Image: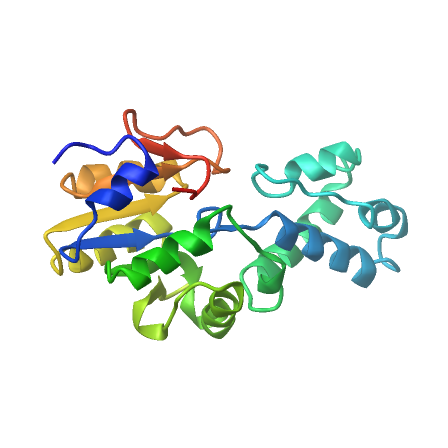
Length: 232
């Protein structure tokens, strides 16, 4: 099989013998508006505790392509605030980000809904494999996927069992099970550390890098099909 150079080539090659594994956050969905909503809610909830900080934070603007909310704080000159305030903010953000409460603020990546709908309509097997913790985010994840127009069910949504589980370890273990189902397996993910782990553990899995945002100080493996959007 010739390695696809575009998403269109990939789509033309897929058959019912393939399995497409889809990450969610920063792959199918942009999360920057979720970050923004959480920070603004913090500003509202903590205004009496940190009045100056929260008045400024209420104007926060998180932008597509930024990892986390660090750049948004820098634009407001809040990144050098007292450590106790920043620690309080981070704890609040982490609890809120990994919950059901703010998922409706996510935005589908361009063409993503149509791409997954195409897989469904042409009976190409696919599953969602996400580092979202199941015990914290299961109902909201399924509901938001459906609301955005993604074909979804609990049977094809695989989530991290525990929040403390390491994403790349969980995904590698799950892919070991999933890849037995079909003759070819494809992983579409935005995190280079995930892609490196799967390349090392499962070299037969075909990797596709979604170039949105990702954890710092790591780059994707060379030579992968890289997607800027899901138009095909």
